[in-house]
Image 1 (tube, rainbow, N blue to C red):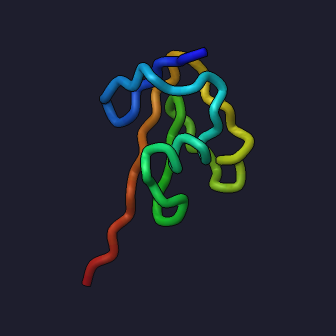
Image 2 (cartoon, rainbow, N blue to C red):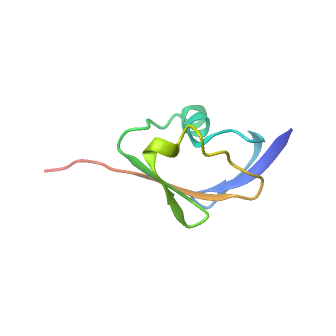
Length: 69
């Protein structure tokens, strides 16, 4: 079964229903380090990425941190 979610303002309609945040990050090629994930306006703790199941219609923001100097 497929689900549709919005990530950083872009719609993704071909994702497996019920996938976790960890699986989504791997699918999209994001490293789990140096990022923050917000789901439906709530921060998802890194310790919960593997057990936070995504639902059809969820809205995510994925922010990557870049070091500088």
